[in-house]
Length: 433
Ligand SMILES: *[C@@H]1O[C@H](CO)[C@@H](O)[C@H](O)[C@H]1NC(C)=O
Ligand SMILES: *[C@@H]1O[C@H](CO)[C@@H](O)[C@H](O)[C@H]1NC(C)=O
Ligand SMILES: *[C@@H]1O[C@H](CO)[C@@H](O)[C@H](O)[C@H]1NC(C)=O
Ligand SMILES: *[C@@H]1O[C@H](CO)[C@@H](O)[C@H](O)[C@H]1NC(C)=O
Ligand SMILES: *[C@@H]1O[C@H](CO)[C@@H](O)[C@H](O)[C@H]1NC(C)=O
Image (cartoon, rainbow, N blue to C red; front, side, top):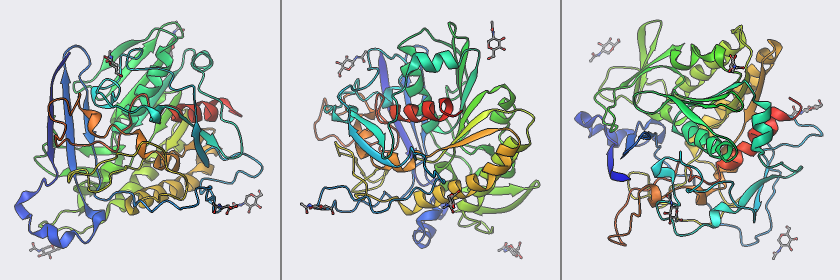
């Protein structure tokens, strides 16, 4: 089946001015890194995954010697749940049940997230579930979900983490009913599936910036020019389909860390991380904030009323190096709260997400759109054990047990912790919906 694995990356896409990077290293916020993983496989499934990595790892603090939980008034910033349970504050607890599917029972897992098939030796990471502190979170029930989704169209919009998530959902649903892939784009980044028994349609739309972007990376992630971003225009790829979606999970994040030239009203207004160009550094946070505002404005003013989940961005777990300098993620159990904190970059992304969501929530809701936050950041931060690591490749150590292998500590193994996001999704859309 596996024809071969190719790995290409170009952390420094602007080699012309490489000496300038030293000066710019001051600011990890300015990093624009791109590396793309390309896996080719015979048959119809030939995915491409982009890895928008950042420079800094979540800083891992020494676990407290007292292993009792350090609850520390870890207040959720996500809303005011007076008398209600905050689904996003809780713990990972042992779950003897294990995953709903395996590499054998789900045929649509991308090779580089198929940790079982790729020979990951430990499986403890499969036996945990997310338990909100103040309530029970029912497990995802695919029959119930499908029953509620009869004749509906559900879309995931975002980057490769959204694709990771859609595969998780697809695997869980496919255990109970047949599913047919009905569309894929040229690069297998956007796809659509149909569940004939329920007439349920599931889409994933690849739109890593959510706004209009010209990306000059070839299929191997080799960039020939800076990304051109229009801060005042949505990516029509998802926006023009929006009126077909009954449900949408939309998210953004790490791609904004890349080098990009920013446009507004058809003019260049600045850039992010473009040494050697006579342009104003505007900061990725400016661009990200504008992008999210544009998304919410669009949703609020559209005549179409979808049920929207806005997912916060996901942290990575590289330790002892970065993604491009030998960073790994070898942990085999979840962190406990207080053991780890978000990296600076992840904090910036998350703060923008929460602030803009809060601002938009009222006006969007007033227009009759149900919009909820799917705040997966913190609970994901507690799962350093859930990434493929070296097992993004097929049996990476079969020939040489000391082989130097690129690790993936950003995406999630399937099955893996990302499956539990579906418990939350189901609760958000089914309960008091
Ligand atoms: C750990 O902390 C808890 C609460 O602060 C305390 O009740 C317990 O005795 C501590 N255990 C140890 C072994 O220090
Ligand atoms: C939460 O809601 C209560 C009552 O509606 C209010 O008094 C309180 O100030 C709110 N807290 C926050 C942090 O918004
Ligand atoms: C699934 O993973 C197991 C190892 O956990 C492996 O032996 C088996 O060949 C894999 N099956 C498929 C279809 O990839
Ligand atoms: C299937 O669902 C779509 C909406 O997703 C709807 O337009 C269509 O009429 C449905 N087909 C049947 C046979 O109900
Ligand atoms: C840089 O841009 C400014 C303002 O647009 C201009 O005045 C200046 O001459 C430019 N410098 C160079 C070296 O092109």
